[in-house]
Structure formats: C-alpha cells, structure tokens
Image (cartoon, rainbow over all chains, first blue to last red; front, top):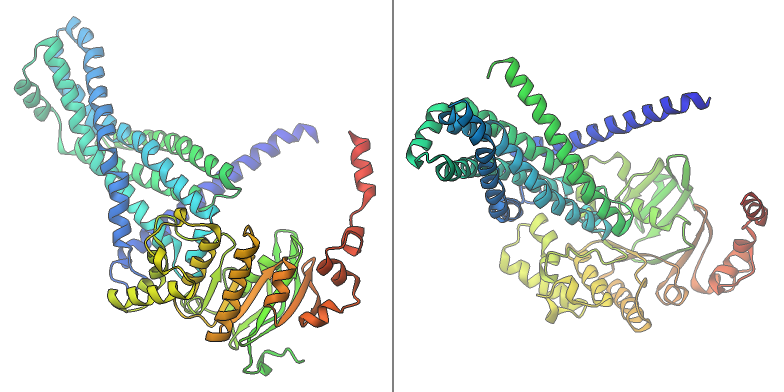
Length: 269
Length: 273
C-alpha cells in the first residue's frame, strides 16, 4: 500500500494542476467571450469603461519607467556580452540584426511581461484578494453586479492591451540600449546601427512578438484575477495569492514562450 | 401551518421548504422549513457553525440549496434564470458583517453604484438619492470620505445605506453588532427598527447578541446543527423550558450545548501524544 503512495500523490498533483489550469481557462474564456458583447449591453450589464481606463493606467502607464529601464539594460547587456565574441570573428556588423531580432521576437515581449507580472499581476491579485476577504465581491453579487464583468473583464483586457503596448516599448528600448552601447564600445554610428536593424528585421518578427505579448498578458491577467477572487483565509491567503501569481505567471510565460518559439520554428516563421 | 408552495399566502415573503445545503460531505443545513412574513423583523439565533450565515446566503440568493425550495413572493429562486436571479437580487439588500464597502470608493460612490448599474436615473437624481440614503443613516456629512476614514459603526451604517439604495423589499443583516461598542450596537439596532417601521422593509437578522436580538425581534428562531430548535416571540423564548433555548439565551455554562463535547476524544488525544 505504501509503495503506491507516491503514485497516488503524483496523481493527486496532476489532477490538481489540470483542475487549476481548467479553472483559470474557464474564467479567461468567460471574460473574453463576454468582453465584446458588453460594449453594446444595457446599463447594469455594460462594460465598466471607467474601470477599464483606470486599470490600463495602473497596469500600463505606471509600468512604463520600469519596463523601459529594464529592457534598455537588456539591450545594452547583449551588446556588451556579444561585442568581443563577434569582433573575434569579424562579425560585429551583425550586432544590430542579432539584437533587433532577439528583442522583437523574444526579449521585448518576455522581459516586458515578466516585469508586468511583478508590477501588475501581484497588485491585481492582492487587490482582488483583499476585496474577497472584505466581502466586497459578495457585496457586488448581492447587488446583482457580476464580478466577472465588473472586476475581471477590465483587468484582463487592460493587462492584454498594455502588455502588447509595453512589448512595443520594450522592443524599442532594447534596440536603443544595444545601439548606445555598440556605439560606445564598437564605434558603430547610430544611423548605421538603426539602418542595419531595419534591414534585418521583418514584419513577422515584430508581429510574432506582439502575438506572444498578448498571450502573456492574458496569462498574467487571468492568473492574477483567478487567484485573487478565490482568496480564502484572510491576510495569509492574500499573501499566498500574490506570491502564487508571480511564480505561476513567470513559469507559465516561459513555458508558453517555449511552445510559441517551437511552433514558429516548425512553420519557419 | 401548511408549507405547500401553492398555498403560500400574501403575507409570506420568503418560504424555505425542506432546504438542505451540503458542502462536500458536510451537511450544514438539514431539511429546514421557515416562513418569513412580509414586514416582520425576524432574528435568527444560533452559535457559531449552526448554519445561520449559510441560511442567510441562501435566502439572499447568493448561493443555491443542494435540495429543497426557496420561494420569494411565490417564485422558487432555484428555478430562476441568471437574469431573473439578478432581478430578484435588486429587490433585496444585504448588510455584511464587515459592512463590505468598496474601499476604493467614497461612501457616496458606494451608494450610487447600484443606482448607476441598475437604474436609468441621471447623475443629479442619483446624487439626490445618495444624499437621502446617507441622511437616513446619519452620514450625509461624510459622503466624500473613504471607508478607511470612518469608524466601524459608521461603516455598518454606510453599508446599510448602500443596501437601501434600490429600495429593497427585504434586508438581510449578517451579525450587525459584531465588532461594535455598546452605543454603536444600540444605534444600529434602532436604525434597523426605524427602517422597518417607517419603510416597511422586511428585516432578517442573524446574530448571537441576545440584548440586540430581543430589542429588534418580532420573532426569533434558534438554530442548532443545521436545524431549527425553537421558534417564538421574544416573550415565548424568554419563558421557554427547552434546555437548549434556556442555555443559549441566558449564556449558561451548563446545558446540552456543553454536554455535547465529548471528553473521551480529548483523553484519547492526550494519550496519543
């Protein structure tokens, strides 16, 4: 009997994980299916526009400085790390292409989303968790106000839209970081660097990065909202939800990124 | 009294008929039957874990029973569509234990939210209604304060003003005295009585504060282990010979509630360690 315990524990964990993914998926599906129809609904069933603008400001605008700084630094680090190696092979002219493609396809959306996880995901989970503990979500239901429409839809849409916007900012800041550092270390003029970047990158690099960013935004918003509104157990529960949002979001973002990259590689995009 | 749903008279606003609520394997309410009369002040008494909050959540349609019927004005809420349930919820108000005010909004915004969501009133009219509701609970001068800037008693009163926003037929009060000082408790009690007498709002209160319960109630019911064990007017309850009722309302140390605790289990636990 005891020999089967690890198998049972594994099965339990697998069931729990599948149940969790399914529950988050159902919440995201309910919110996203609802979102377009809510625009045209009557009072009491309409999209909470003021809430949406507020959330977009909170999630996106307040993150601009942090995301810009981090992605500028990533571009600069790439340039510093690759410069000497590329110089050894006389391939320093490929630096703008490498950094451009890396930022647009991969690092811009990824780094932007990871910064947002800590910045917006944690704050959404903590806010909704505190609302759940303070019976505010029950109060919404008692007034016939659907918490998914009123709380989840604005936060999820805001996270998706702003992750895409921040990915564009990240792309540019990474390229600028690489450009400034390459000029300082290899002496490549800004104009040539930018021309080489634009010659190397294709629309598919930019668009595939934005598609990834939208999915990352959905993951962050969905996980934060699900874990937030399901908080039980007071302050400890809120703390757990916040931590779990950050940890699970980062793991999910990286795993989904790997899947995307593999699919794009298979199709030669 | 007959409890046939078809025989529900006009003076009964809510009828719970053989209501059972289970959470997993645990049965919290066990085939409960209760009538709430229109305009009455009903107090549901019971110790912690007796099932009072679950019953209140069921009657206010925040959750549905595992089996049985909850008839509101003759319509079973279990058979209602989502839209019908929402419509029903706009005819009831709930005062939560903590007040449950939206922390990011001022008191005025808290009260205006249900009005903005469910009515076509213009902003000026909504502002007027908000002022009237705040005046009813004595908080008009605090309209622009956030919930974090007011006391516990004021939060309860503001929560009550929000519950009244849509002029409900029934208000459910979940432990309205919890966490309040004696003066605030009296204030909230008089507010509940006043609203019931002036507006005719049916009042359902769950509490285990006996002074408050006897002050408010037209009728009291006592719950224990998911069942009703007594039902009567304050006088009838005070004069009851039922040991459980006597122990509960007098807060006695000796009685069936304490006898239920089994010392055998405790000894076994001690011996195991």
